Length: 91
Image 1 (cartoon, rainbow, N blue to C red):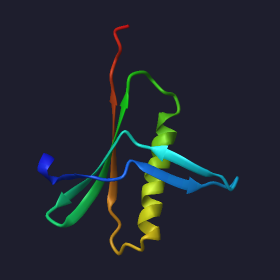
Image 2 (image 1 turned 60 degrees about the vertical axis):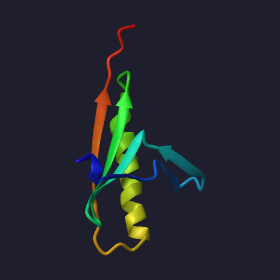
Image 3 (image 1 turned 120 degrees about the horizontal axis):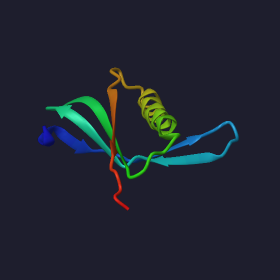
Image 4 (image 1 turned 180 degrees about the horizontal axis):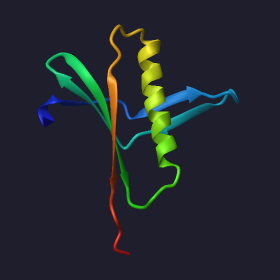
């Protein structure tokens, strides 16, 4: 499986209703490919503590990734798969 993953951009930007440009950054983003066919974008977030609003941040990341596909006029839209890794701190 590792050989079918390819790095992709972790930074994304969007202009909100307030006309300001906002930037988001995923921890890890990979294209999952089957040969030359892009199957999905895999996003991974690492967490060392619970962040109450993390699900909303992830929805932003995914929404921006889908919007990017629309802006590029892709014939076939690819799925976005998200995973969060929660690491407990012993401190």
